[in-house]
Length: 472
Image 1 (cartoon, rainbow, N blue to C red):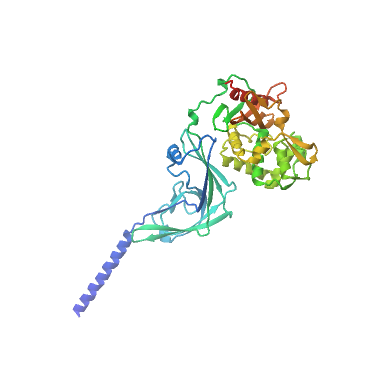
Image 2 (cartoon, one colour):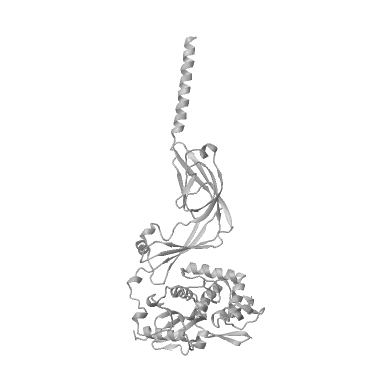
């Protein structure tokens, strides 16, 4: 009997020992946190050069932008999310693990919004996140701090739904003491399209003449001359200073119109004619409610600079004038025009409607890659199918007022003029010397007294002749 009791007691002590040992082993498990990095299912990258100066190879990009520490052709991206649900047991919540999870940019707790590049989870559990599509679909971000070259990425988020959820399940692996994460994203597709703009690293080494270096006088306050064929900047006078573009704006209006419309579409002319009249906006000669072809309307924007045609185009493309201006601002960011903001499609004055000569150069370089835009830009006139209030023909304001388009050394092929009292006389033009093509942007030409109606054109002829005519 005593022997049996002894055996039972021994067995009981062995069971107690292993039970406490197992509990002790369980208590000794320290779970390592798990980090989940940002992800994209579908990614496309279009590489462009900010001023069309130099086509960089992959090796050159890597050398120019070492601080990025990533492949500039396939960068991770960030998106905004909020946590909408979290399932943890009470023991985990009461534990010493703080915080519940965190990202590399901001620390987030059980609710709120974070920018998600990577999140570190400290607890097992089920986390549900909601990705929200922003009202402004485009975000521009400066990448890198190199003084000779900078990279700009423009992200266009294309998500079918306004918002969607995805679930991260974090489990414990007691064998190696780590947390493991599984992302359930079968129905989630991220489309991340962005354009990477690289400024020419050699540009600071080039000699660019300024106003103090030349032997001519001009009326314009801002000017930029670029050899479009080579990308070389020849003349720069306050070209990076923000100013008002007046109807030079309409180049962006037309480009957005071309990229969203069809030349054979029928357009009902809907415009605020009373407002245009009181603002003294130029008119193409269309009447409210009449139906015109898209081609007639868009030529009415670029050639005679018609405010009636501009508003009709905007309403046709976007459903409202304000939404169309939103498309213009999105396009500006896509192109890297980071010193540009549009408030109007006509260019009528607003203190928050501004650009720079450099940004307009970016726009022109891009626009002339579109053969339809280029053909429109160099047109002197456009014949209507049926006459409008001003007749059968709409004339280019540049050609209508230019005393000549020929200068010693070349010819001006076309131009987009603009004028408001705050902006002065403005002109964006295209010229050739028979070999290369050149773009010139001038803003702010004006006189305190006297006729200043062609000062911008006179400046263009002077500058082109100085640099292309051998007088430099």
